[in-house]
Length: 396
Ligand code: LMR
Image (cartoon, rainbow, N blue to C red):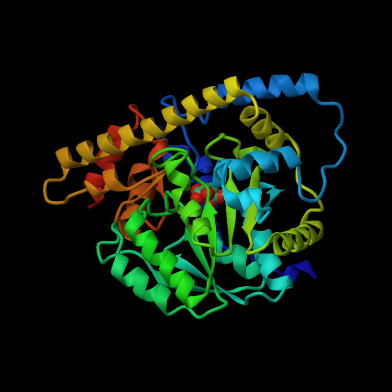
């Protein structure tokens, strides 16, 4: 039976990571998958995380299953992180949260919830979007389509085209929005643009599904939640998928959440029961460890402060690397302006490099970036920056 199964195409991001591991050229540089690396090229375990783990070793009394919706304390803490402690939607019981194994499973559960309850059959993603969005949504049975995002340069937002595109999306469809630090481009709409997006959502009556995987990596923990909070203030119903892979460095612990905000608390409670039913059909209940770490840090003033400091260090380092990359490219390439890299936000930069140039970076210089031209800025450091700038200068 299995003889007839064709090989799956390599994954656009994780597949490259695998070919990087197989490459034995010295000095190779991996700027593909979105993981933060420190100056020595290591993805560190945050000190706040290590300390929380020590506390957990002492405090944990059982490894019995969590409930389908996960750890209630984690859910309460991350909902407040997302919406703000005093958000009326929380007090009114209109915001419900379930823990999920990372943001990816959160997206899948949200999509299953929409399909199983016949709420929608189509979702619109920015063009471009995270390489796995279409894959996850289609696997759940949603049809996917795209809305305009970038201008001709491929490195800046075309706000007018995006808004026009969003205007034409029919009522009842779902629109996937990146709450901050757009993946793969690093290009975010301004708060004025978001105001228009909210007005359009209200008028056109499509449902926002906000993917928020980089809270704290853009301008700060609170600023990066502004877009979600404005949507909630506007009275719109929405779903937010939240990830703690990046901001807590918990990649392998698969720690995420889905928060659904409804018009009434009865609608929210009923929706929560359906989200849990989708969980049961997928993985029964979520893993415990990552969520326990996040809940421990967020509920302890000292650990929380320490985490905020470590998050700020990661954010500031990425900003510094953006400036260094721009300066390095300016020194080598006189006739092309790369200053847009500094106004992009989060881990990634859409560089404007063509697939051919990306292939040359890999084959001739052992510098790996995603074929769309996405560079993981957080993978740069003092020892590889010159090599990367030289390689880019050679291929453009
Ligand atoms: C990325 O975009 O590189 C990350 O979100 C990791 C992944 O799973 O693709």
